[in-house]
Image (cartoon, rainbow, N blue to C red):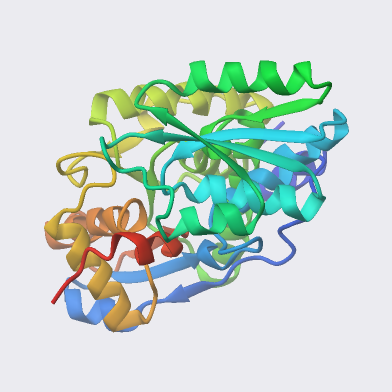
Length: 336
């Protein structure tokens, strides 16, 4: 079938979901920031930080579908994993609380010494949402998770494991649905010339690409890597894109996957000057809070592209704000 918004809309109807996402998230112009950068580029932001579930953010869209599958399978325990300040873990615990089922979080210490049981930010919400925490060293998640699942199953529980970031093909359908919101906005208000998003576990990036292309929209999507180098991340995203695109009966050309790795800095979650500048720019010009691990690095990537003239004058560029502000209150990197 031909790719069109109607075709995508019809296809999305085939996937059951919990309906955590009720309304389209706003797409707002950022006139003050656009003027400040003074390169003739019009910046816009899609406010996925305003999604439902505790604290909002991109994973709500993915969990909408993944939690439906868990409940369809009769699960009474959810197990997932993430970094020590994982937004995904916060939202998974939030979804489990809402559904009244048990939740276990395997927290990976990606930076040595970064896990503190008493830390604030997202970590504080894990207890609040009655999720049980299990610490794991870098690369130890599969081992710790397998042992945990075996233990829970031995107790007679029906366990459903959600991968990190809920970044599997089903979770990525949540971002194909977000793509439809963007396509519908563009039908009314004119198209965007580019979309910029953080590229981490990959479900957002791959789902957005698959959804846009399924709707017949060829807008380029720039993924700003927050962890891996360009080559590694491009391979990771392409592998996911192939799987998600299959759900919509589409190809997944490798050239669709654009990664920039200039904002990773010393590594995942570690502060950079560009990140701190982006955090402050967004806060003081548009009154929007970013987070230091994901969105401020993503937005720093967009700012760098605008400054280097990557977008012609008059371009309309959309930044996807995937949430994460609760971790801001843990890292507190900006100290004047």
